[in-house]
Amino acid sequence: MRVGVLMDQGTATAGYFTVIFKKVAYRFRGTPSNNFTPKRAANNLYRSYGAGAGLTSVRKGKLTSLKLPTSREVPKARDLSERDPEQISKLTEKNWNLYYVTPLYKFVYTGLKSYSRQLSAFIVAEKQKGIAVEVGLETNFKVNFSIIQGLTEIEEDAEAVFLQICSKPKFATEATAETVVWSGWLSCVNGNTEYLSSLPPEFTCLPLFCANGAETMTALVTTWFQRTFDCNFGPLRIGSNSLCWLAAMWTGCEPEMGIRYLKLSWSLPCSPPLNVSFTVHPGDAWELWRSIRQDQVRMTIEEVDQFMSCLESHFFRHFKIHLSAGELTDVSTSLGSAHRDGKIKFMSSHYMPGILTLLTESAFVMMPI
Image 1: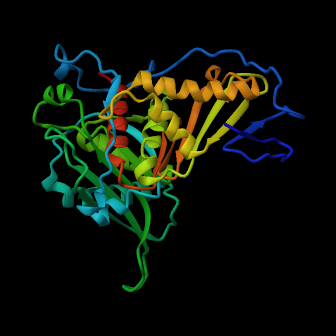
Image 2: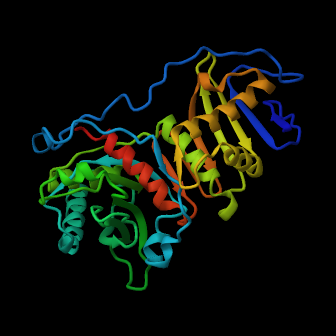
């Protein structure tokens, strides 16, 4: 396979692989064969559990720990928009910040209209206290809770809930269109059945929370949820393990959907810091993944590790840099992108259930037990 390199100085050569180095002081000249090997960093995947109140007393003796699975079903192409096109379209082509959520106490789907009024009143009250919401002083808010049809995969999954906050100038005419200032949704896709069965009926488990909008508004929304439903929110980081899964899963979509490219980014622990972006031709990525696969129904962590190891080995042969010594920080294709800081973007709804299953599993792992 041929390799193309884009240096700091702008020098580039064509090829199926494109590599971008971002750094503070390094300057590569000539052929990329400098024997540069950063120090290896300790693996730190899912070792730090979120703090906060949970349902410890309820689950005591029933559930001691949750772990990410070592195998999963191969994602199947299924257009979610066929069932609820208006709602599903609101989930795609947006950058979502991810959070985990502990089970909601006495949350009922029949109360969505009431929740809309309560959250709207809460935002107005907080604004009157001087809380900045970054949409202007003379603004009216309208909050709408609704159900997203088609995201549940098993009987135990609770229906996903979508929130949208719109603003409108206080003295605007009726013809003035409302502006969406914030949106978010809670979901549970292929939730852990042992965990779900351990919950009393008063609790609704929607462990994955996605938010798009100003952080101040997200803080207001999560505060209202915590006070109303006695739950707890925490940031959901996407670890290297999950990013590797996403890289393999999106690569597997190439024959049916066409991923256009596979871009991977690493952060290497050296001084000064070095960030490397590695773009792989989709055909090459698919051929490699297909040669590794043993089962057409399920994929395993061993196959994912081998897939990433082959890419890293190919990179090392050309640049003498151990990517495995760093941390995978970003994965992106034309179907979506994900970053270790807990940001994800869906460009298509066809493979969302498989991706949301992985994120739901991550949320369960991060929740305090």
